[in-house]
Figure 1 (tube, one colour):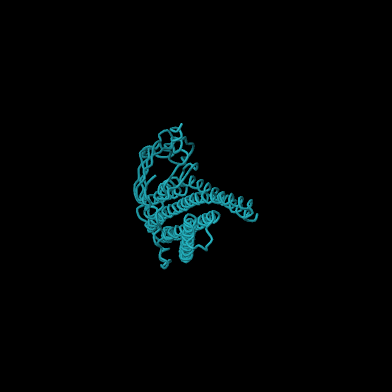
Figure 2 (cartoon, rainbow, N blue to C red):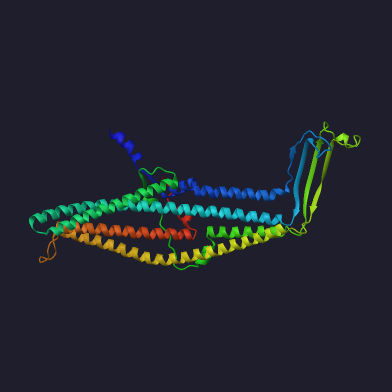
Length: 429
């Protein structure tokens, strides 16, 4: 029976490291798959703009019955080829495709960073919830013991009923907090399961797999840093692509275009061509090869299209500038908040250390007595209260540390360092 239980235990809980969760999410995330498809589409679009210089080759035929004067030249077989030879606009369209491909790749990197942030925040929140639950389980034991002590003291007449109610309230509040963290842990398991494609049942974290967040400077040129963000860089690359397209559309007017063309056809012999054409001069095998040159002198539609393309480029540029400014402002505000939350975390940590020291003092006094004969000796009630106080301050420290780390990860995301942080995590599980 013990052997069967040992085999079932690994199935009940599935521990996963942070780096593994992020790796799995990047492979299964619909957002990442969408960005990968966009890169493939941009790559194909670039090939399309360059391949116009490569002659195509088409085979076909149009055998048909004719009545009266021939309306066309039905052919049993034909082959034709054509390509662009020279255009002032096409180099700009190729540059536009290059910029669009760069934008797609940067967008993919930006999406990967966002997925890494989502997984990391969910992971550390689940890890935080599990640590809170463990602390609350210990606090619950001390709270229940305090309730028993108060019940005995009330029966003995040493304490009023209100002290027993206060102890019961403390125990009920612990139950309430535990339910909250259990629900939040279940939500984080579900979120991680959706992000990483894992089963949510029994999903647990490995605290050792969470790397330390590097020191983040409170003073930096946020506007310059925002320019290096993949999302902002993608926006500027997209604007650049629009400008190249606009330049190409503008050059499509008043500039020559040269194309290559070749055609070979075998006309059918069963039609009535000989009734209307000289049979002696009619040629069944026909071919032509040469160049087609054209000069758009006036084309109102293309001219309007060029103006629209330029307006779209200016719009994309303005959007990129606005996104850069907003990101810089958000990053600056986050750096200011980081100072405040860091101070709060330090206070919570010191309060937790103080509560631990006070608990040790009470336990020492309870075991060895007081150093001063006139002082009141510590009681089991005070010991339980000190245990509860120490657990509460420890839980406050966990909350403050989680809030600080969550803010730090968002700041790493804004500055484009979140993937480097994940890469520094131990590779295991």
